[in-house]
Amino acid sequence: MGRQLLLLLIAFALGAAVAGVLGAGLGVAFGVGQLCFAATLVYVLLRG
Image (cartoon, rainbow, N blue to C red; front, side, top):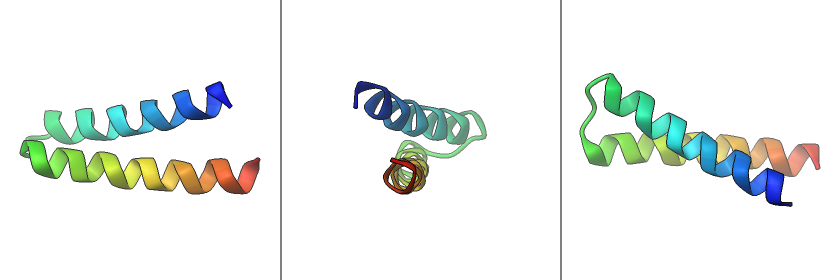
């Protein structure tokens, strides 16, 4: 379970970081991070 939680955290952080580097504002970057988190959550739930 710890590995899955770490994967979700990394997905959010990477999504937000990439959006921020590409010039998105903070709110938009966090929104992209949430989308990445949700997509990874679906992957984790269907895989596990």
